[in-house]
Amino acid sequence: MGKMMPWVFQGIGAHDRRVQYKLDNQRDLSGLNPSSQYTASDLAKRINCTVGFLLGPS
Image 1 (tube, rainbow, N blue to C red):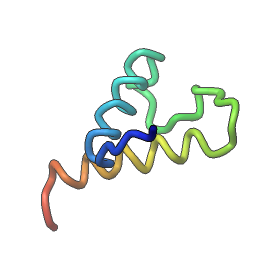
Image 2: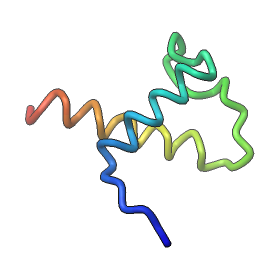
Image 3: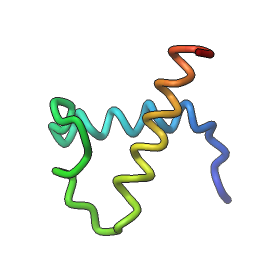
């Protein structure tokens, strides 16, 4: 059974992982050393979605 979680909330979890891995002071996710080439970009998309939601329409 798959989970249906809005991207906005996935971004909160992605940011929490940045803090857990002590990457919150870095501008990007290059220190993550992910096992997949898409992991860092997927996390960045989720974080950017949350930031966009919180900042509202521009």
